[in-house]
Every structure is written in C-alpha cells, then in structure tokens.
Length: 637
Image (cartoon, rainbow, N blue to C red; front, side, top):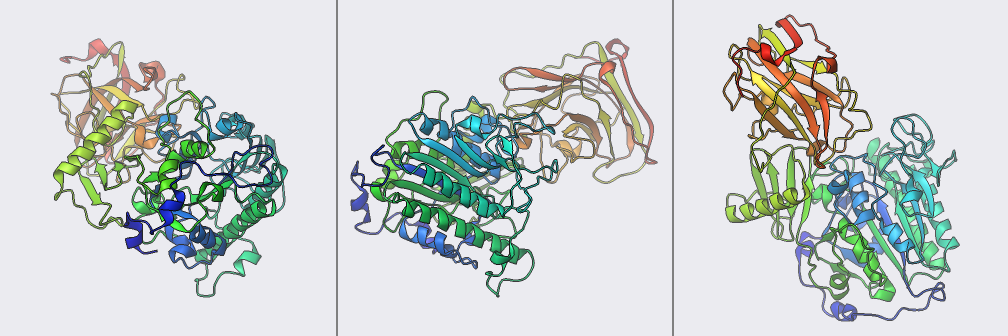
C-alpha cells in the first residue's frame, strides 16, 4: 500500500453508502437462535511490524492475513503502545495503561478491580476465552514474585496459554524461573507441540464448543516475539531469497502465525458463524530489528510510527464490514473496548472511566472519529499524536512532525510551527497533570515549594577524588528500610525525594541519589538511555551543580514514571567522577512518595544504613556515617 493511500481522507465512491445505515439486519447464522448478538474474535500478533505482512509488501508469504486485509476493512491509522504489556492492558480495560501501573515498561500486574472487556461481555451472557500470551501479571502459583490472581479472575471462562513475556516455543519454559509456563486455566501443564500451533488449536476448540451461544475469544499470539524458534515444517516453507539465520527463523514464525490465523478463520466458516462474527486482526507493537516496520521510522521500544502504528483490519459482514475498503480514521487499542461493545449493542459497565472512544459509528459510516489524541510516556520522552500532528518532548528539546505530509517522521518542523508545538505541549501537560503521572524527564510543576525538613540523624558523606574517572566514578549503596519490600512497586505517579545539604568545603556538584532494582543492575538516572531531572530541570546524570547556596538544606524531587512498573528497592549515591576534588554533603529523609499520598521510607537514621563502599585508587578518605543533625555546624534551612 502506498503512503498516498495511507494519508488519504477520501474513500472509494459507493462504499460509504453501503455502511451508512445506523443499524443493519443480522443475517442468520448457527448461533442466532440463542442470540442475535455478534461473536467477537480479537487476534493480536506479538511484535509483528507494519512491513512484516505480504499485504504491505513484506517478503514473507502471509496469504491468510493478506486475504483478510484485502477483503475487509483495513484500519490504516491504528495506534498501540511500543511494548507488549501496556497494549494488552489498554485493550482489556479501555483505560490508559499508565493509569494502571502497566506502562511504560512491561510486567505490571493488572488490578482485579479493573473491569475487563471479557467481564463486560460475560455479564451479557457471552462465553469468554483467552488463548496465548497474557503478560499482564504473574501466575497464581508464582514463587519468584507475589502470585497474581490469574487470567480466569479477569473474566475469562477458559484460558490456555502462558504468563511471561516470552517462553520457549517447544518446552514453554520461562527464562525467569525455569519452570514450564503453560497453563490450562489455573493448572500448570506440560504439553507437546509448537506454541503457535497450540494457540490456534485451543482457539478453534473454543469456537466449536460455543458455536450455539455468543462468545468473546481473545487470541494474543506470541509470534513472532523472541525467542526466535520455529519447527522444521515452517522453516522449509521460507522463501529461498530470505537470508539464513535469524531472518529465516523469524519468517518461519510469521508463516506459522499466518497458518493459525487461517485455521481460526476457517473454523468460523466451518461453524457457519462468519456473517455474525466480528474479527479483528492486529499487533501489539512494532517489530524488533529482525522484522520490518517499513515505511515507518523506528520499531518496538520506540514511539515513532514503526513502534506504535499497527497493521489492523476488521471483518463483520452482518454489520456491513465485509467489503474491501480502507478506513483512515484515527483510532487505536484503547478504543476497542467501547467499540466492540457498541457493535454488539451493549454499553460498557459502570465504574472506572474509559479513555477509549466508541468509534463504531465512524467506521460504519466512513467518517472521521472523535479520537483527538493518543499519549505515550517512554524512556527519555513523552509524546502526543493527533490525527494531524505528533510532538515528542525530551528534557532539552521538542520534535514536531506533520502527520499529513510526513507520516514517516523524516523532518522535524517544530521551528516552522512553534504555535502548534506549544499547543500540543500544553495539551500533553494537562493530560499528565490530570492523571498525576510523574515523568522523569521534565520538572515537576509544584503547587507549593518543596521545603527540606531534616531531623534526628543525617547521613554524612566525605570523599576526595584524585583523578578524573569518566562519566561514572563509583556508587555507595544504601540499604533500604525494611518497610520497602519487594512487593512495593514503583508506580507511574511516584517521586523520589530527599533532603540535601552540600557543605561549604565541598565541590558543589558531581553526585546524585539513584535507584535501581537489584545489585549490579542498571542505574535508573545514569544516561544516555535515560534522562532524569529534578524539579529545577537539572539533569541528574551530570551530577548537577546546586541551585541553592552551599551550607543550606534543600529538597530534591525526581519523577520515576519513565521507569514503571518496576521493583526498585536499591538506593545508592552515585559519583559522576568527572572532576577531582573534595566532596562533603549530607542526606536525610530519602523517600518514595506515591500518588496516593503514602510515602515509603528509604533512609531516616543510621539504623537504616548498610553500606557497600568500593575501593578505588582514585578516591581517598571515603567516610560515610550517620550523625546527629545538631553536629552540622553552620547549616541553615
């Protein structure tokens, strides 16, 4: 498909008229005796890029996907998240994953208090099933993390699949604990076969078993997500011109995915359910470098279009979505919850507010949607995408792209359209503030100035650096208070806060307090992958110079949202190490303040201290000890 077709706003003449009726009669099918409500099958590939499918000129043969996209309604502007868990959470709840501690990273636990789309359909008499990769929480029998409630607790009558991000395709073992990660409902099960084949098999079984009642069937495939593994039969079908190695394995995994999607669609036809079954085929995020996101820029782990602009098509003959056409209206994963319910003539259950919009009338009539924006938060930036524009906001600059003329994001036009960039930034700020998201790359907009309140004991640091050490000198680890346990997750609205005093005999900068998940893990605030600033906009990884005068207590506040969800319980003082000199400073009241107002104490007194002080010839006179506040001479508030 050409990019001209992707950007057009005019549809083929005559197609709109066929879909313009506000209600269309349902054709007879095998389960209309029980209900005229449509069945729903939501098929989601894992890491399948825009250019991975043959319909978008990909090199891998995907005849079933091609036919589905060609003969039904292709949604050409469908948004998702750049990684697995957030997209799945947003689809299931219709709510932005940042609200639920399911983004921007993976591995969050979906709160059972959220009402999923499966629960909504089940409340109206639907059978519900999930087959494939969950990745929205831990297993009920997990022993490496607190156990989760399990898929069945989220409204699914039947579940066959696995919980982690990516399990072995033949043994289904999960790399994190080495156990088999394959479940039939809540029972951990060993089973022979190739995972992609098994997912298709059990989805088909569910369709057959529920052919006489309405059903909601969620099929989150794991292919072509790593590990890159394929059975020999699929490898033998890879075109000869695809090079050996990972590219061929990846291609074989896509062939397997296409086969199983074809089998699910064939099962729908065999059971005479085609006319009154809504089928969606999409992906959760863009492809890894092994795959193909062309013509878009970027891919998985990027909010550029290659990471979030998904190949998507919908079929529902009884609803007028059975003819070949494209739909260019702006929409995405959050909108599917209210839209699918509306297509079935149902209202979302009362409760938590939805972020997604019902775009069914717009798709049906071939008109623009009322979806005004999609928002993302990622490692070093946040982003807002509207039908017309896309703004990226980094800690030190913004980038603006014209989505009508440049959907491939090749030219930053922020200098040409400063008013547009300012308006979008204001809209992004408003969304962040309304939801209480603590972004790490932008200063907190405080309602009142933060005031340091040291008391009792404070932690004194002294060290002399004798030679430059590059970006990082060393880190002194602080043990966390026992109240900060592994079950405490850093969430999107959380802030790291601490009181700081730099003595008058010290260099003014060169260090910062950091947080990470475990000993030996990556520092959270140390670039270049991440950029974190305090409330004054000072970049932490540069060991910022004080805004306040030396000898005076000050408060530091740093957002943690870019790193969530995460179990980060190791706190340390990091020396950047670029300049020799004497460093002498004090810390107190190190906490994580949560959006709820609760705070988790990290350091308050010497009783909370277990130090791991490294030895280095470039650093001498290292002294770390808790002392009474009153022993600091000349300090002021």
